[in-house]
Picture (cartoon, rainbow, N blue to C red):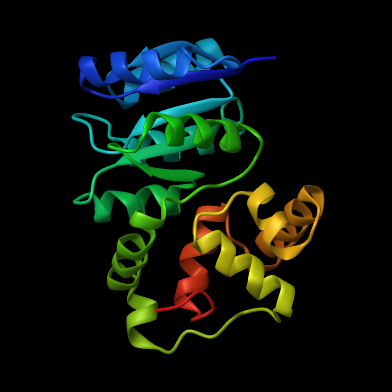
Length: 220
């Protein structure tokens, strides 16, 4: 079955470009589009897509609030959310991360990267563009008053494998790539990540990446 996608961006030319890239790929089908957050909610309810490709900065209801509302509604909570961003969207990124977005990708990424990210997200993976990660984490720290006031300790015990998986996630690796690097099956990696999410209380793998940096596991 094709991966069903709704594209959301306030610029019609960008929506058109995204649709052309995605619809050209066998196994991906764009089933709807919207120009703002309100339209996003309407389209997702009507089309029931697997993935939403969502611009984070839009007039009216932005991508952060749209993400929050999609997650809060039982009818749309399971949709996977891929946020598109630019280098100056740090504050929006942290908002989307906290709201429960699954993946982050720069708007000027190569078409092949967009396609592979949509495919990975549809399989339940989270992808954070390595070019975005450092800026996102720095902004996360700046805005997190608790982090600013007290040393951050890791809330759970991490095995050596846990740490290796967290480092790989922070580098933007997919489950399949992590499995190859660590000599694990893809299902074993998925189970490892699921366990980390459950134990740390993170709502998405993207949030898990931010926490890994915060704990000093994935680097500075």
